Image 1: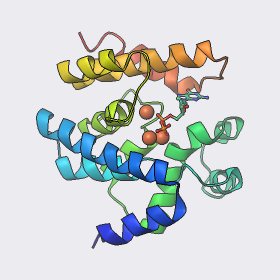
Image 2 (image 1 turned 30 degrees about the vertical axis):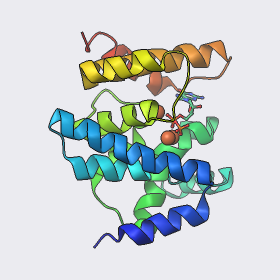
Image 3 (image 1 turned 120 degrees about the vertical axis):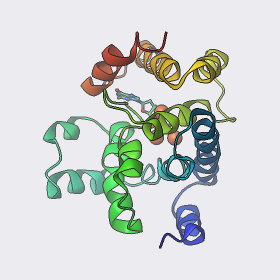
Image 4 (image 1 turned 60 degrees about the horizontal axis):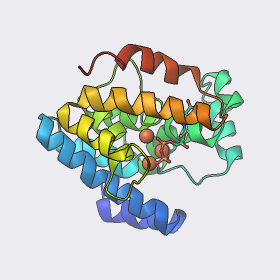
Length: 188
Ligand code: DGI
Ligand code: FE
Ligand code: FE
Ligand code: FE
């Protein structure tokens, strides 16, 4: 079975205190969003806890997995921001023996979203963005939309993230635009 204490210890030993506490806050936030929206609380919480599990791994680990598991080679043109969820899910599966695809998909989708998003995906995606320690221009609006509906929260987050990436001259992973196009008018 799943040994939560062992996973917490493992996470603590391989990531910064900052990242570890963020993961625990996202777990709690995801559980709250799930409870409010009639979504599986334990799955949302586990996805929230694990979502950044691989974020502090070296680039070489991700590129090796992309090649070994024949993941989309286009991924090699991006970096940690895109890899830690999509490729991180493979690391979670192999190291923690978590095989629940609902949980793994929520980890895979937590940065760029997807057109098909389950309730667990949405809770994880939004919880990452609005957990209590998040503070950025627009956070109040993000929390208000998330309270209105999960779809409205997802739409706002995608719009805000793309605008921010453009402002910072950062490249944008094409799936982020695909997610944006799908969700932008669905939360009204
Ligand atoms: O891991 P976190 O910092 O908690 O949050 P995240 O996984 O949602 O986002 C990680 C980073 O990825 C953040 O700096 C924003 C960035 N990001 C999101 N979408 C894209 C992106 N970066 C690129 N290059 N392209 C994207 O489409
Ligand atoms: Fe992340
Ligand atoms: Fe996010
Ligand atoms: Fe995160």
